[in-house]
Image (cartoon, rainbow, N blue to C red; front, side, top):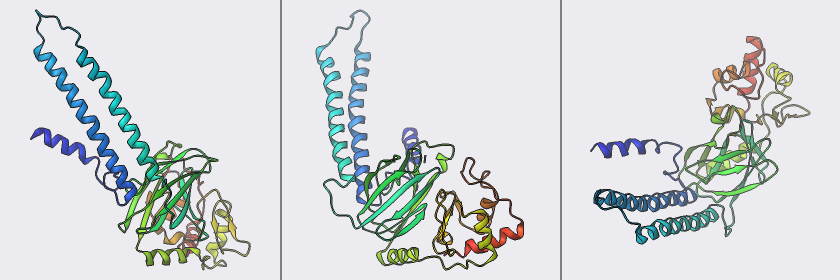
Length: 318
Ligand code: CUA
């Protein structure tokens, strides 16, 4: 009873929104089955070896010194070799499958670029650039290409795909597919600096029509009023680092920070750490450092009136 309680408590840590043991698509399911395969193929030989050890301890007698037994030596050498070889072969096969080799044609291509400390998301065939949210149609075969703009990051949405490194100057590819509509959480899994632990993202899986509507909306330039007072504050404080398509006659094309063309449609701020609402956005603009120490965005000393005008403008970026 006590033991089963302990195991239940131990397994509790594996549940929840970011569990590779709760796959929502075929690639994550392949990795889940590999996980269980590794679990059993290591647990069973471990139990056998511990069984032998206990047997040896029980049958040992002080008056009869133990003699080296060739059979046990053979088991101790051959068994690990077999287990490790089987694990290697099986993991290589699954690794190729989750990368889409041999290749099945993809329905959609998505590029994700790691930055300190956020994910840029591009749809190269649709002329869409966004951040922190990867939107996909349910049941679609997605080719995910990843790279980095600065240091090594790693991209992982445990319920949807295998973990993949984002390496500067190099492109890695992996497959992603989700068969159940919903929102899934992902995270950076390579230490990339002080904000590594809070470098999150969301995967939103829509039914096909809802995805088409989303991508159409994202393709449009913003309709926000570029002559409003808030737009002037944006030009003064934000334009060096953030892009807004269609914002100004010359366009806002700053690149170190996330593209804000459709900021108001996003669910979160600061790489999926804060809900996207007026209070959080205001606090973030005035001084993001207390919210995410180490974030690259500086504080902006706006007066309360200016802040509200800027917030009005940012909240109109739909
Ligand atoms: Cu990016 Cu850790």
